[in-house]
Image 1: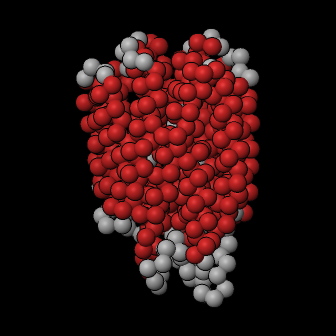
Image 2: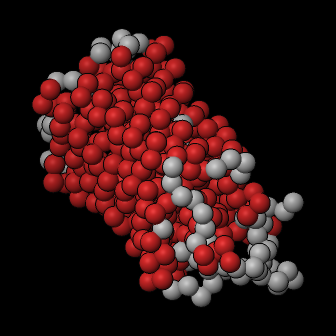
Image 3: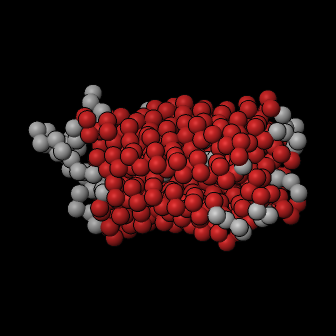
Length: 414
């Protein structure tokens, strides 16, 4: 069975898959490695942990808040112009971070600019571009495969960042990340290869949501209780992942572990998440996606309980990183798959982007809230306990969501 959707050539589909994978590898790899900068930056420019994590929290909040608008622009004008401009903005935000002398510059560069850049170059647009060109029969599995590229990025970027920090300080590591933006630019351009169908020999099969207006799409989503529950539960995903990505290296430092273990743990998360994304994507074609999502949230919570209840060591940390990696970004193809299942393809970037606002609100509290609690209490105990409690609650709610397609989708001819 062909992997390309009717109306798109095989070469067009493969180009989008390859370009999206490379773009996600680099953009998500850098994003997931910013936690390695907490200690060297706070020591280098005399800002507090809460100051630095506030910049990362704002980055995630801006990423989420801007994602629906960025998704709508991509749905209207195509992905290419959005992803290319986002790559330049990413490099500009890093350059401003390099010149930071206090919290304000960090917030503008690492927070605002990189936040909008991630809305243009990270998971949502990469998966939306992919969903448009692949066969619905293999959509979940292939979305999982492409999402895996985002986690492989941490396997690459984290060791690079830690090595450059050790060699010449955090400033050299930021310069290295700007270089990665240069490598990301060609991939960002080719993501737009699927903006328009090209196959003139195979009649293009229009999506069931053809003719749906932007306002109608928003109305459908707002009235679908399952979509609302999924979007709200997505909050816990962002909170748990950003708490770990931002604070795990600092937590290990408080436990007397070397900084290399923090970089290694983030790399292990990335490596194992590649397999986890593929696995969850494959399972998403065979089992109800909302059940899988709820299971992931609950399993993550249980892993956090076990890890933070044990003394930190290299063994426990790497085992935790490996198991958490399997459950890391695999939720993204499941959420995108549910959006397509319920509403169709026409506004997939917009509707998944709206759900992503909730995810990034969770990321905001995971990054900044963890820093505030650490500065106030001197440990991360209350922070991880809160993450576990809402994780289990969200997982249970997710399992009971209504995933049925809208009447329009259910009643349309196949």
